[in-house]
Length: 305
Image 1 (tube, rainbow, N blue to C red):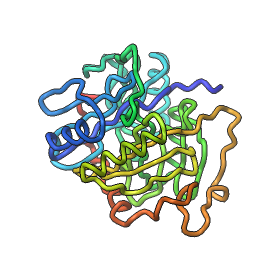
Image 2 (spheres, one colour; image 1 turned 90 degrees about the vertical axis):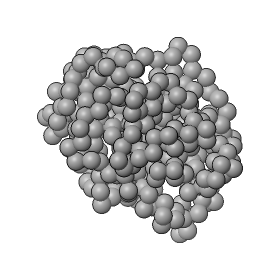
Image 3 (cartoon, helix red, strand yellow; image 1 turned 60 degrees about the horizontal axis):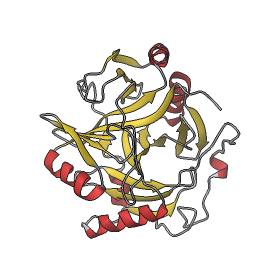
Image 4 (cartoon, rainbow, N blue to C red; image 1 turned 30 degrees about the horizontal axis):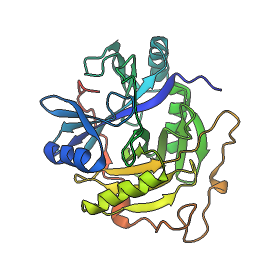
């Protein structure tokens, strides 16, 4: 099995123009819990071992601030720092002690297409995580929009040590562990966030959590269905300030024997958008929401991870 310098997707930081509203939504409806808060940020945990999986920052607009990955070792942090500069990224800080509540050592970079990526080692984790029906356990993947998918995929492979798992016409799927993908890169006219996917225990949890969302007044934006690459069950929603988020389960587990499939092999019959054939075509307002959250040019570095 390939040894990865990056071992997992850990968390995502987002900016919201209504911090109180976003906190109520993600705790009362989506299924996360507050682990700590600062004057302008709220750290939210899932039921797994990660200290947090989502950080809400007070912001003038809805925006993605950073994506945080876990590195295998301090040596890997140093290696990543060397690699990313050689492949066109800018180091913003570190490796250095992390002053966020999760602790550890942190490296922060701006990758060539403008996104801020963080890599942490030795961060705080709960000794015991527990899968809870209908509740997020951890992040499954982050889907990022890219104006040049192949160039961005090459950066993840060459600079960060990810491996390409599949390539459809519009998307590249990359892994850093046995999950089929931790990062998905989607072809778009702008660089930024497409959506954040939260892993729940099983397909029944996807259904029940989706029902909870509907009861709270948030209709399914796309799904329920089963994806092609990754074979995972999905249901997409739009949160109160415009972020597209996904409940997902049963992500395909792969190893080095997995054969990468290309665009010619990931083609649906006319009218179909998933394996089951029950997910309707994605509505235009959902497509628009998936390209609304862009990177902030030269965004100031935030102290929280």
